[in-house]
Image 1 (cartoon, one colour):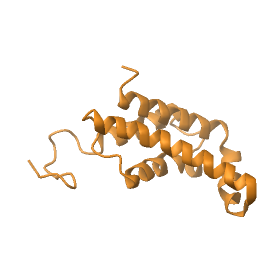
Image 2 (cartoon, one colour; image 1 turned 135 degrees about the horizontal axis):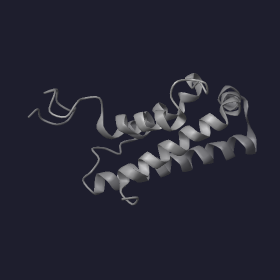
Image 3 (tube, helix red, strand yellow; image 1 turned 30 degrees about the horizontal axis):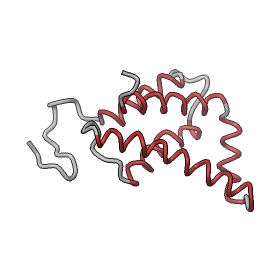
Image 4 (cartoon, helix red, strand yellow; image 1 turned 90 degrees about the vertical axis):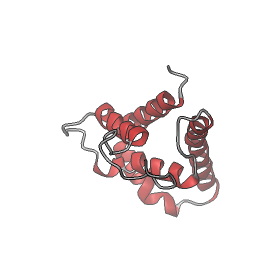
Length: 130
């Protein structure tokens, strides 16, 4: 249901991709110029980023606590944010996939990985092979 961590994560990824699609040119400028910001504006953007990371970390932590997700480590949070955030670089509004199509693929990748269930004996890092 909608209160499940997986559903929350999927919704977040969809909102994120829609935001990229609707504001791609502004995002490009923001990322390119962010390093030159100082003072209150830089502090404000840093706070926004920290709050967004906290939301993602909260969803992952809830999933770990419920036994549904493997990790909420900072490297996993950052990796997930990198996956969805840098789509602004290559997203093509006239491309074959809509923002929601891309979001579905990103969410599936985050939630299920690339390995087809029972098709690979490759172990997950930190877990013993079965």
